[in-house]
Length: 153
Image (tube, rainbow, N blue to C red; front, side, top):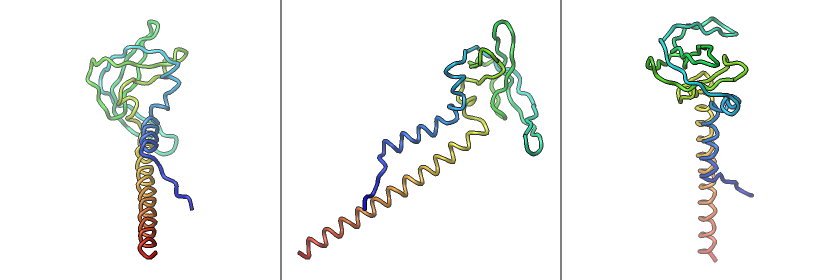
């Protein structure tokens, strides 16, 4: 019976891929978009509409940025306040500047989608630890049996 193992490097590599998931949602903007300098404004109230269920009231910092002389306003992460006047790089679609993302850690990671990588890291870590413990137990049993057979020969 062949026992498979997961190397430490494979474990870390997959952890990195899981951590990159929230950033990968914006891959088109990150690779094909253009960058503008935005300025954080007031911390404002907004209503987040849900497809199913009631609307939700949240707070976020308004971020203004300019594209070809026209000013656009986007929001930072919900319930996170940027210091007013803070310069923030904004990545936007040149054809539709309303489609944009903030190039900050909080802008890329503080969203409703961020719970998925956390869940995946927990499951992956549990799988790795239990799988490798199983392999270590099987190896210990095999080594013990080999020592026992040598003694009885």
